[in-house]
Length: 182
Image (cartoon, rainbow, N blue to C red; front, top):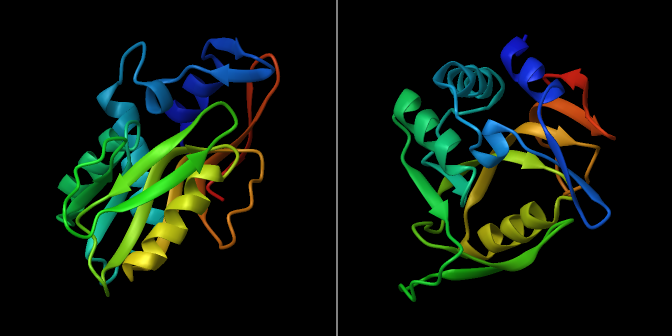
């Protein structure tokens, strides 16, 4: 299961950002090229593991959740909303203050209404900082988060609720896939 994802992860390049070993991969970075078969494998996997019954919207985080969410939305006919890095000042916009292992900043939620049943999909979870902030903001918006799925889980970050991932990795000088479909 997820052979293409596993193979590309275990052979992807690595760079250092301070003390952080950062892996470069088409799903998480969009480089060097996003293979349609890899993206299809990820989205088919998410459809299999996510609870999509009665879901009103797919929520993705800019930037690397967009390609996954776009394909998933097209495959399921569930509309997608993008949590953006830019403020639009639309009525009901909610600011999300996020901090990850290698960056921090603000994200902005639009297009979520009280009572919306949503799933969150994203490329990777590493520290859980972005997801904790997003979950708090969705609660303020009055949305019900039905399910969460990441293509890649780095380690075992805690976000205060269960989530799913297609693969779990450990990163040293290279990526090691340690679990599949968790």
